[in-house]
Image (cartoon, rainbow over all chains, first blue to last red; front, side):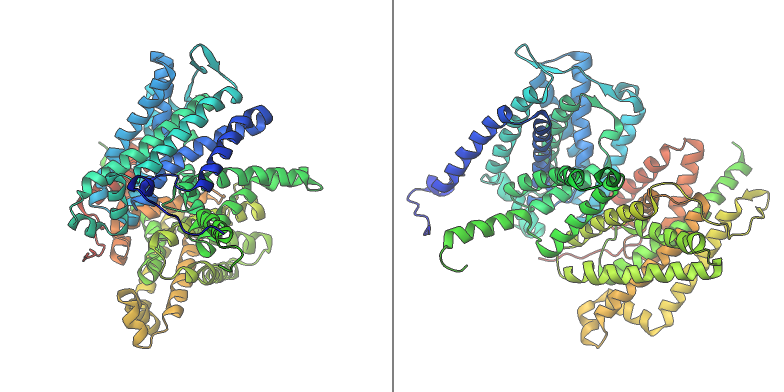
Length: 345
Length: 292
């Protein structure tokens, strides 16, 4: 049993990873991430990259929805902005890979700031639906301007970094996962700063926050901007990963997917965003594997897509009804069990 | 500019706006009573249409029996949804309940695809086929009679809820659930009632929409326009649902004709953004007063 934590300095108290156990787990996790590409097959590497991109975008949405309390159904549109920016830069300008990613992030950020402007006047569900408008307008722009290749979309060459062409999942893994980890670290640190604290204050009660001297419009916009920056970078990675960007790549259902991911994972928790994105990405795949294992599985594959849709919906409903704080809370409960063991918790 | 053509287009737009208004009324009823934004309204409408399809085509019931059966079935579905998904979340933040309806939409689409497959189907014709002329303007008969049914139904619902005891209870619950509870109104039953009635109204509009354009598992997209309608009109305003429905119907018809089909949703969403910027609670929605 672990009893309490003794902290003797302010620095120790404010540390991001404060306990020895946590640090051990992190080292283990890092080792696993390093070893994974050498052990896994192509299929699992592909999934790992996809999960990683989704984790990045879900974390961005978590900043906005989970920590600042502004519900958005436009995350996919911002990913689209990032992806198109990256694709256009890669094809027409040919600028370096990492610069394109950053540019994708900033363009999406600009889009997020524009969409965020109504957030001071419009609140709650009205805002959620206004962000749907943003995603439709973005889709329309992608599908109807010559610059974005209209409905055919854009096909981009593989990225290259220091002369290495990133054309396999194995190679992309080494860029996608580190970028995601960097963004996760950034998000985790954000909530130790005054800006992050202001976000949380706005979520808990925006009027009280304003009375406390937090400039509502500025911080709400900042939150929108940051969240879309994450989406933009994730979208850029997405573009390099799939190498083809079309208007249909970023539908409204994708925004719903990310909102579902942070609900299932746990809103307002970095770990929640990670767990949720992993869970929601993996469930359909596991479903596919399970159907393949069943006797007569080949006939059942016809039902695979609708069954996925049903399971997706049931997961959202089930988590909201039975486990509103999501997987992060389940994790916390497991941890508490081991902390308190052998006592009852 | 061809004025007669413009008049014809506008008329069609307003008539299809009547259908939006009916679906929007189903939405507003639930929102007023339970403060739940039901994003699955389009999917509930779809289920109503599919129930009608089952009764009328698969079981080959006569139309006058199939419609009530479908509507009752939808009402039952509404009751089940309220009891299993909405009631347990009483008192949770509105966004949780909103997300539950998102999940519900997904479940309904999946179920429809499993049971009826994703193929497009046709509903049996039951609306009169003779063309309708308003002055010189031609109006598609199905659209006209659909709008007529919608308008009559809206009027009936409004009258019923104005004078019937249940309607009074609903309005009392809408304005202050706690006070209504303490005055002896069975608030949980009112919640159920609101969902049942809403599901039935959605089913009727689903049957009409389906008989105009056919049914498929992507029919729920209709709900997106309905969502715009209620946001423009104000989430909790019946009058808003009517005005918003007609307005959006008109705007969609004009945009679809003069700009092209792909502009329809774009223009409606631009209207939505403009209205929200000027009137954050929609045209007729209640302004919420916020206090510390």
